[in-house]
Amino acid sequence: MSAIGSKSRRDRIVQLATTTGLTSVDELSQLFGVTASTIRRDLAKLTTDGRLARTYGGAMALSAHPEASLRQRTGEAFEAKRAIARWAAAQIQPGETLLLDAGSTVGALAHELRTAKNVTVATTGLTALQELADVQNVHVECLGGTLRPLSQGFVGPLTEAALERLTFDRVFLGTDGVSPEHGICEADLRQTRLKELMARRADHVYVLAHAAKVGRRPFHAWATLPAGWTLVTDDAADPRVLDELHSRGVTTVLAKSEEMP
Image (cartoon, rainbow, N blue to C red; front, side):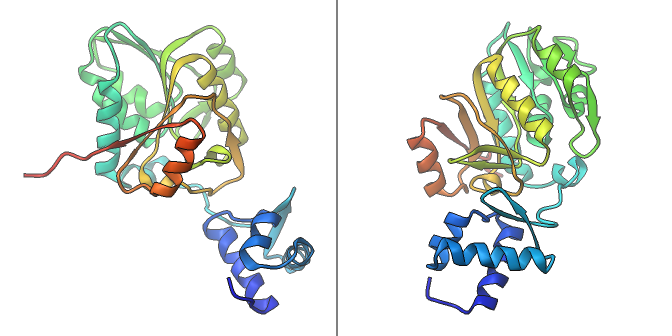
């Protein structure tokens, strides 16, 4: 990037922090072609002016990416979520025990499981519970705890204690963002801790995330997943991010939407 004035650079830093979460001192130094010391002075000035909040190694926007409610997210990327859910459902074998996260895409998977035979589903999400509550051939376990109204999911020590009593053939996780460097992103540290615990209890780990979430870093709480997990997304995902994920041992699947007649 060509050299720009300090005011323009600071304005751009705020914009990046708000839209992409790009706030690391090293990343910003490389992006703008200035020293780390210059970036630190920029961040100090922006913090003093009340435009950013400092974090370890960088800064974050004061109101970056307010968390959307589950109701708001349900209609986003509807066809992509359906395709992802159909692919995920096709992996499940009769007799398996599954763990479903909260979230709209995992909720779409729960809808696909309404026709499943002889499976057990444990879940931390109200959407999955509502989808499967009246299904006779699916045994449902609720991992209760503290309900987060925005995500419509249970978190906290009660949920974690319940997980310690169970193991699973497959776990399906939702996320707010996927990063090759950091893993999967959420708005709340309780969620990221829970996702890590969920992944450790399953033989196969899947993250269900439509393309807009791939390479996105809206928040600053991360879950690191065990090696060999699978990202299920759609064909609009950034191929550069997918290549980087693949180089780090992540299996990537592009679910295709059904063609309309």
